[in-house]
Length: 404
Figure: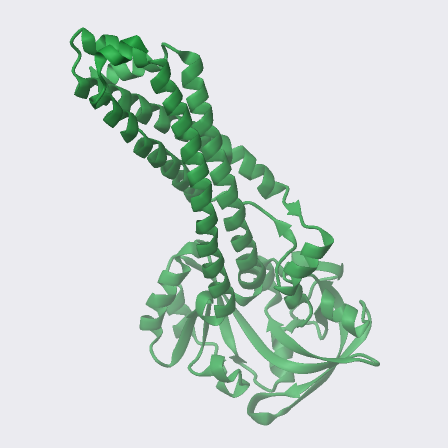
């Protein structure tokens, strides 16, 4: 009966109810958009440097990551592949040969990362073919390379020019080669574009004198959020002979930066929640003052204060949940718009973000967890505020209320 009265009371004064609903609705949209933009930036950072190149999980021979030496390369083993694909979250295993080399054009040189890739697998899982902005993509039989656009600009090279590579191969073998530039690739992370050189895997194995060997495997996931759990399981499955690294281990700088920024973000969100709380509190105070005479009459004719307080508490809870629910769905198209149409940063901000290896855009996230989380937080705030009218009504004097 109390909840039934609370529901009916909400619609006796539709304008008051809609004002309160609007306050909660806008609060949910505002908090969701702010959190969505922050999480969207993190997703872009992770995708630019991890998802598109480094990989969420990497598998190497024990000791490789610390030494970065091709002498610690690994054989392409069917047993390892079988262990990887025992986990249904893994939908791809991408072999690579990675090593540093001195890249030279006619007049300039630059230390670069040479990456031997399987063109078919890279196109399938990492969409490397879609990053070609000039020229054409690699084929397995090519004796040619793709250059990052930043590196190509530095060396003054374009499609059809020749690049010379000089490095050290497996067991100190000499690694030297001259290759035509078949294409130019562009990454969201400018830092990657300034140092990467791609060539077919077989050619890289020939260049570094390591046939049948790879420096490591990059795992692709159909559920990236499960990658950390899978990495922990693979460490047990593969044993001490191999090292399995989640991206938070092989890219600690990015992981720590996101963790620190997320903590700072929650401080700003706390301030926003305070503003939201005062906004909701003011609408509830307005409702209490408008109905003060009504409350006095109800107590005077015999309604118990506790039941009256429970009824009003129910009203606030219902309107809070309703407003949060509507706000959650109202926030989705707003966040979806900024996801499909990211905000382009100005020239100064663009230069600063690119220094950190990030794409110079603000793209919102559409992760459902963000919408549910913010709706629940705002609904909880409104419910907490509802304790005030509950206490107020349990102490209400009928005579004073009716004289108001």
